[in-house]
Length: 128
Image (tube, rainbow, N blue to C red; front, top):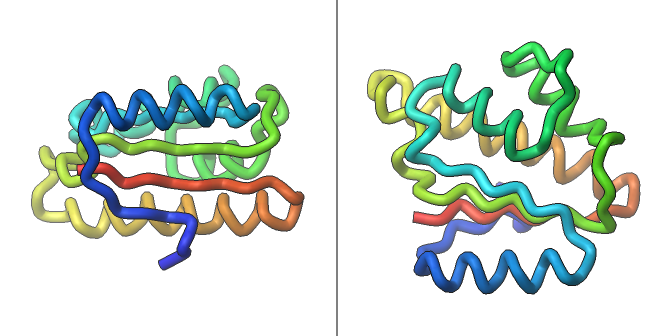
């Protein structure tokens, strides 16, 4: 797993403090609520809102990948992604929950590598 993806277990106050500090250093902050990502469909809606994806976003994995490696509609010098309650993501799809969680990590790995080539730092926190 990419070292820019960190598993953590910090309190809500600590999360907000770190988000506040990152936002004041020019970072774009994407905050996803794992409890709101019970299914793939709800994940697509949550990530779309978090990254302000354009209207043409197709709410599927390919479209997610394309948008995460574009983001031309945002302004940033680095990116911080916080997924709170990561373990609860896709809990309504228990039979494939771990597969979908691994897919999320895989897509953020791709995003990290893409933006690294562009000279932009991306950090992802999977908080539980």
